[in-house]
Amino acid sequence: MIQTYTGYHGTTISRGENILKTKKYSISYKEEEWLGRGVYFFEKDIQQAINFCTKARKYDDYVILKSKIEANICIDLDNLETMKILEKIAKEIQNRYIKLKDGRPRKLKNAVILDKLYKIKPYDVVKKTFSIEKTTHIYDTNFIWVQVQICVRNRECIKTIEEVIRNERSYVFN
Image (cartoon, rainbow, N blue to C red; front, side, top):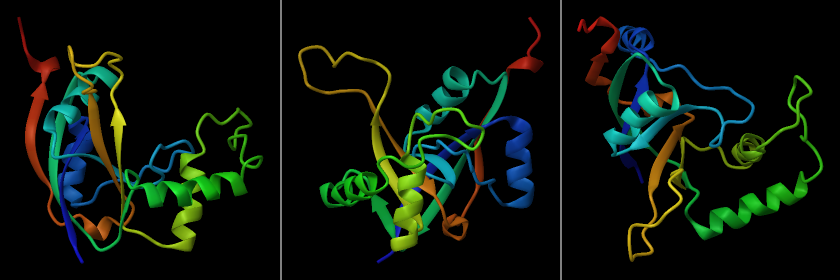
């Protein structure tokens, strides 16, 4: 069954223009990506993409792209059964993969574990809810600040790409 997602991707204007021109996102291959290799999106929440550009990356100029994503196989890391599988893989590789290719110690084995899972069951998309760096709950509740991220491993699942916000701060004259 096909699952459809709306994803928001924040990037620099020059990268965004290249994505729009080529109609193709670049795949992130970093060794410590939290959802493995692929193209990263915030699901349904444009403000998370804006925050990524302005707070996490501190881009002077950025663009937010919106994409429709249709996936046949989605790995939902909020699912307990999936987490049990990941835990089993993590235990199997427990003492391996402790260093990055450049010799530095590895902080996260997420990408290694998800690569192993991909070899067992190739998937199109992996999805996870993460808590945001705010450490407090909303007053008198147990609600925490979260964001849902999607990593598209199979770029063929990305059906549309459109620009929805462009912020060209460096071109504003005071």
